[in-house]
Image (cartoon, rainbow, N blue to C red; front, side):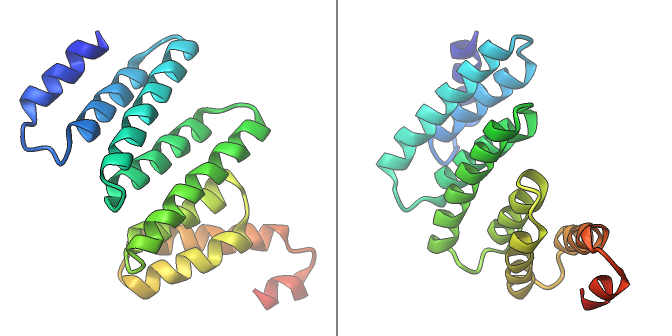
Length: 168
């Protein structure tokens, strides 16, 4: 069924950046509707293999790095085991950081780094510089401001007393 979906995607989107991106998207979509977790993981791993191949063919194309990061993020958000979730979050950040090195003024990449740091790793202190950088790149991002608000709220709930909260 996956092959049929991939072939259909290739016919439907003939102007896609790369057949690797199209195939990986089809595999991820198939994983999203899979009922069995083992099947889902297998499809995610296959999508990652395809993205890794595309990345080897086009090493300066950050789409592959971003998609590999997105894949890790998606798996992290589904993961129940805290250690595996953290590991996947760290892997996602690694891909986003490599992409940000190629395009350092891409506000979305910095937002994604902040999102992983806050949403997956639960580290507001780590998220803050990423979100600040995102706003330096594009100061009108509503989503970045929203996440930044969450960071300050979370830091406030962790503060021990009013003095700590005032220092935020």
